[in-house]
Length: 242
Ligand code: PXP
Image 1: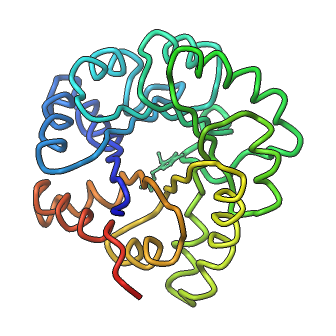
Image 2: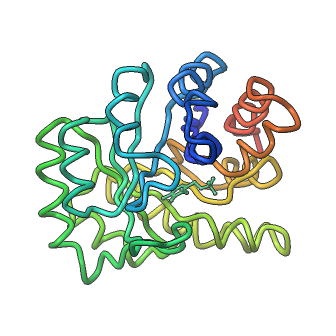
């Protein structure tokens, strides 16, 4: 089964915001990405709205025909917006306000009860919930206790280690993925995935359902164009027989 590709369009919004007008048009980009084969659109509105703004989430709700995935720290403001927009998926991340980018997963061991209180009302609205997790099989049982539908593995460390030792890079992810499968949790992954490291991850992590990719994909599109770039990433979402 191919892994679904959800394209994170935060960096497109960052370019738009730098001039204050509507160029590039985020909604048109989202529609075009879907036309080129993206299986979903991800946005991560941060508290300072430096890239995707909260208002974009409402507009994208009506524009996206595939799956809209909204990521973020579950602040009161964020949760109110997600409750109103009702995306297909909401990915909860433990980011502090002002954080440059997500760089760690939840400590589900100490926070599963708190997470459960956030997750259940989202699920009651028909929203699938995923929580961002470090590649640590011991976190999986606690993630399960939170009631989440899926976990999203933080692939920053994988991307770093891949350049040094690809076999070792994927080990903790394989163990965590197996634990997730055994617990009946769905599996997503994201952060720092790119054209060089994506195929190896897809080939070696069992049960992977979705990757969300932004920074590298939008950067590659400067060279290859958006349509070609989506094709290149999509082809790496198909496991090679190994
Ligand atoms: N997943 C989460 C939780 C993120 O915060 C981000 C970055 O916004 C991504 C995935 C995508 O990471 P990248 O932009 O490096 O592809």
